[in-house]
Length: 298
Image 1 (cartoon, one colour):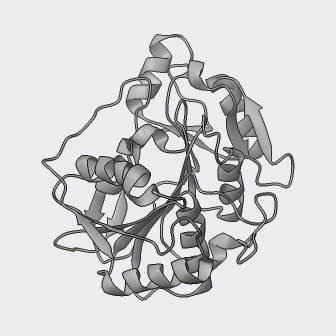
Image 2 (cartoon, rainbow, N blue to C red):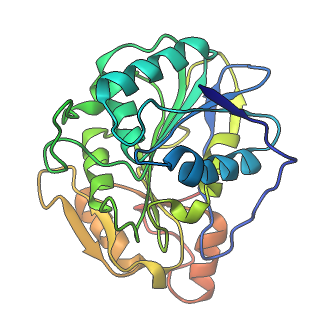
């Protein structure tokens, strides 16, 4: 059974220093109404009682120019990869080309596995994983499926992948986001200080990523290569995670913006912040006027 959310009038939240969202251009096909397919998490009552709030937030932030599809997954209290992956494949077959797929928690892990296992029936516009457990090496064990360490090579190619995780998630540890980032080198890692497993029922950062798009020939590619996106002010950076790409320690714990830059420089990766956030760091004396080489300001 499928539910389609009709979003109300657009409501845009402008974040201050505590959580300015990333601005990213994604090339997308010229569709009259872009579609978003949201795959729920697992657990009794999750569809109606928990993830419906996430879908409502996303629909509100996207505005009435998007169609958000929110199907009910079969046997949500006892998720089966076979049943859920079949349901996802059926939903994709009924969608339009350029559909954006979003998966929360167990739904995100199953969505990633399903896209890696079989070519989707429709071209995918973007893949968004929210608080998803990494089922495989280094993460949680899986009985029905495991995610390969070369997941990025098996996902639809040329499609932007975004991994969002709250640093206060006590259901799925934030280290799982690092595992996704290692398995999908092209992914953007979004770390949200002060946010729980449900991202505090606020998907505004995700809406910003999805709405800053431009129409072209239907080929999707990120505008810039900046794998780590910091949301929030430096006082919120306790237990910020940065993953290693070189086989060194998989997770590094840093305490502030300066430590994050140093860790990124050592590992040869880039940190991306918004202009408003960086300006606030400069005003408080926490960053130089000229951004360091490992920092991209957008």
